[in-house]
Length: 157
Length: 93
Image 1 (cartoon, one colour):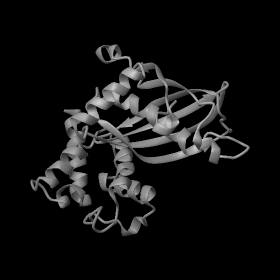
Image 2 (cartoon, helix red, strand yellow):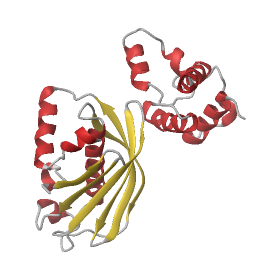
Image 3 (cartoon, chains in turn cyan, yellow):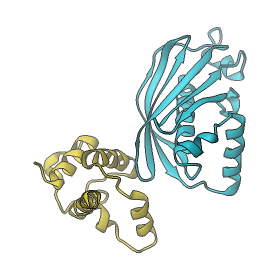
């Protein structure tokens, strides 16, 4: 996790296009300037960043389902529950499933487990648009490689 | 069995907290009911689910943006319901 760069997941563990599900993992860094302010004496992973991590996990699912033809942008959040503190150094298991793919939008249900316990969950709505420009698309390709996006799943899904 | 309009009006009322009695067939979702594009995603989700269709919002929006259609053709409720009925019929064909 490169928290300051908004890279909130480390690896895509599984992408199942038939079931429309994805699993990712991330490790909260031991140190970050963010923890200096959130909070002094009690460093906690900000809840908004946990939500962003769920959104990124969902986003890669949608990118897979749309076969890199659409970029999902976070549009709405429902039923968000932050159930326990997440602290530096903890490992996170994230998952998401598609609730609905509409025309130009998609909805997912996502959660994060930490030490085997549900840490947070939410339903997220995305607007789906064409990649704004080739640079953007190329960067997403680089990110996909970095996250070990299973491109073979696109051939079988 | 409720009409397409009743189903759509109920969805809009529940999703956007708009009094049901103010929603008429001639109401324009955007201009009269004040529904914005984000709220319309929730409505589209509920309509897609209720009718087992996928409303082609991207295509409709593109047509409006290109000047090939007016928003009334897709977002005035009686017209929207006609589009929904057409999509349902196409699904069963």
